[in-house]
View 1: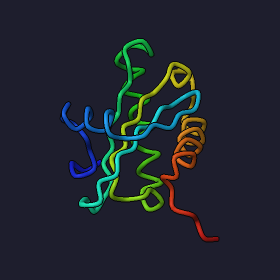
View 2: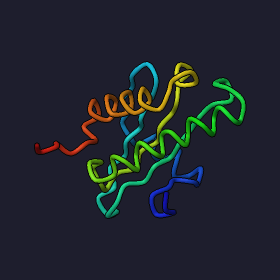
View 3: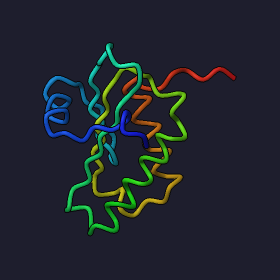
View 4: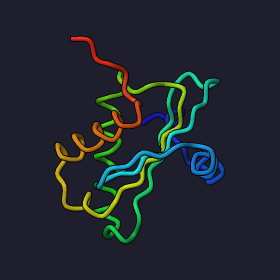
Length: 116
């Protein structure tokens, strides 16, 4: 994922938490902050130590980044997204993670409608 698409600074995370809206399901919480001046979306990931060791946490982050890579043309630009993984994600495979993330993104109206 390119640097322009990442949220790394604590101030940016805090701004999304304080000013953004949140949407959740059992596996993920997504905070969404509108930023019209930005031409693309930015993604921040948070996976707690309660979920597992570093290997498990990095595995989850790779899955989430891959889902966003695959859905990049469908994700609404001009927003900051912070994704917080919950405990059930630790035992999920990639396809289940993708399905769950798509579900919560649809709840937050973060995906453009797909024309078939």
